[in-house]
Image (cartoon, rainbow, N blue to C red; front, side, top):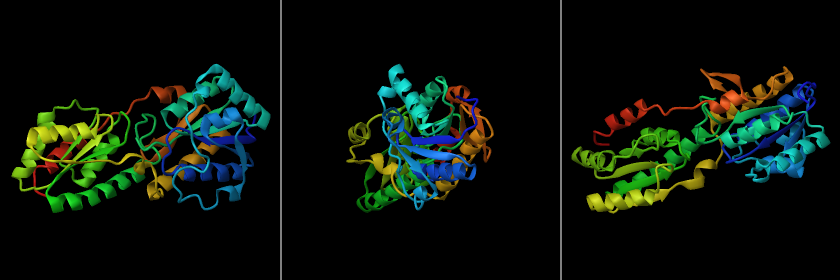
Length: 328
């Protein structure tokens, strides 16, 4: 199947949605058309490929979606695709629809599914889209910047009321088992402290002393940002109350971070990645993931890409600590 000239491609979004997915879909469709390829939209991710849930896509199919959050193709997790029988059904759908290759937009789980599909003879290209920014094969993943800005806007609003009441706020942000979102947001929001899964928690040093030092510096309100991979923000709030006699207010931002119109960075990056993914197929390359590296777009073999790890830049943690030693 991968020796054929690519004439028709399928595009899908899978896993958690991320702002900018629609921009990537738009770029894939329009670039495919410019390369004399047909494009089929697969709805509801890998499950949609199994169930033959599709829509032919033309240039006007993606009008006015550049600024929309979420994904017009919908997204879903698929237990069926984890089975050999499910993957064989997906291959049958590709054969029935005449799909020569699949472009899959999503995160680590999406790419692992793409790898299994490639092993059954269907050429694939992955586009990294996750607000967690935790994929080692790409310096940046679609959706991260918009999610950060959404969280920062929420925290700025919380700070207004915390300052008015001289209170402590504990805010839980998303990120699964990675602290990229939490650390970035904490620095940008001027948080008192941040708790990330990459750093073992020392509650006395990382929370109690940070709040005490901030109070001695003249602060009367405090902002603690907690990555969801660390644990429950409510538990952190309860420990602050026990240790310091304060009455913290806990806010879990949750899925609000995934929604909203993508910002300029996510629209531009998604468009470049979508264009590059189609061009990769047109040039005869496949079974890879496209990603950013030093400002450019590169493609990396999918098996290699899935072994790559991204380390949290702990010098950013040092920056946050230095900023917290003064009054706001």
